[in-house]
Amino acid sequence: MGKGTKGKGSQFCVIGLGRFGSSLAKELVHLGHEVLGIDRSEELVDDMSSLLTHTVCADSTDEEALRSLGIRNFDCCIVAIGGDIQASIMTAILVKDCGVKKVVVKAVTELHGRVLEKLGADRVIYPERDMGIRVAHQLVSPNLLDYIELSSDYSVAELSVPQCLSGKTLADIDPRKRYGCSIVAVNKPNGVIIAPKAEQVLEEKDIMVIIGTNDGIESFEKDVSER
Image 1 (tube, one colour):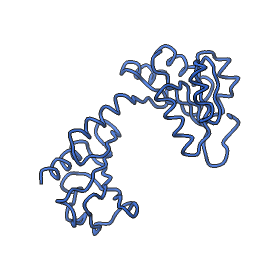
Image 2 (tube, rainbow, N blue to C red):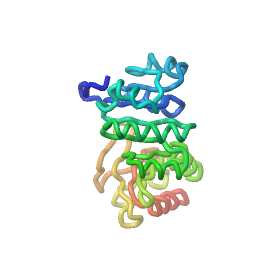
Image 3 (cartoon, rainbow, N blue to C red):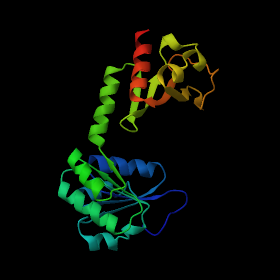
Image 4 (tube, one colour):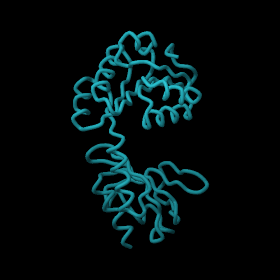
């Protein structure tokens, strides 16, 4: 591990093997990448040893320990430490100093995130906050299957096609003109249609992937729900 990229897969290092870190690490392996998992807990490391490419019990706030693991050779390092904000910040600083190309850090609070951004983290993620936002949108919108905020103004949403839109084409609906949104894909039972044409016919239970402003997506979803 840490000696360059093998095949098409990238090499990731996940520091912190709690619920979020372990879930992330396992999914990266599932997607065909090599993953080194690091945690101070021998129990967590043992639990993940058969699931990841390699696991190590180490203190990520120890610079020498990180350097000895060849941390700088990884394509991306995810600092997924949850409970100890000081350890999270110290680890982020050390990983960045070691020369890792991309450093992604989990933040517990907005203040924690702002500190990480100022320290040069390439990306700060808020899994609990973001999941809360997605679940809230799904609960109040019956056709909404998933919701990902790209920025404060734009989002991507997955909407199931309601009965009122079944048999209509994208030209009939014209979401770009009416709502400022674009349907960039339609997931049908026999496969996904990327960049569907205006004459594409929608059928009930198809899944539309929509990109647009938050207000536009909300208006579109509200209108089709009320028909």
